[in-house]
Image (cartoon, rainbow, N blue to C red; front, side):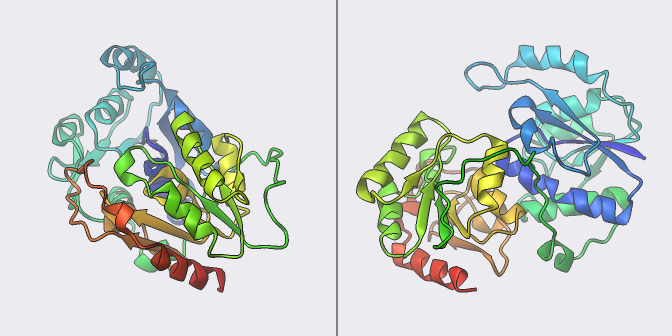
Length: 333
């Protein structure tokens, strides 16, 4: 059997979908799996042993917005993918549904209109799956695969997953990683401001723990946040800008990751690295998967997963002492 999984973006969402690969192969080793992804994130998938081929598409313009004209041109390329026994759209957006439908296949599966992020996406599938949109994203992805293959993947299997991100093992300058102290990675950036924990509070946290702190950034705005943390707490190491491959390598070497609801923070969960994910305007119960080493700290805000309030800055109210307490517990394990 040959299938294609469509999950185009973004970094954290792709990570949350990739967990299904090990369970597909565990229950049906003969399945050939290809993956369709936005070209900006192909590095996340390139080295995965369970993926046969990564198909890259480009559907965003120079302003990083989805372009209808780009999508039309990419559909010509998509028609040359396959053919497949099944295409599984794990995104649930109109753009991903259209791409899924254009890939030659006997079956196109996706979430039904009550379960998808964009209900109209369901019109492009010939088989749909119903599950509450508010449920945990990892559980949604697993249940979709259960439905496709008639598996019965247990919560215990998810909880005890094997690490599932891989890199090319290329050289990474690890001069900033300590061999004598615990290494803690701080992530100040996120896709929008309401998801970010204040740089000043992250800097304060670094003065309360005897550890080697590193800070990562992905764009100029995040670099300013990293430099602000460094200015308040000079002993912190600000990393150079990292590729996805280098990011995976770095996170695999640290003892704890602390950050908001963003892709790099979720990579720690995928690698079974201890983490603390901070939530304010987005739902922690839905967007992360808690384990004994992966903890969630949520603000007191009531969050609607169907409509995120970007004016909700409640994440800023999370007490540094609460993060400190959880950090000390995780570092002592």
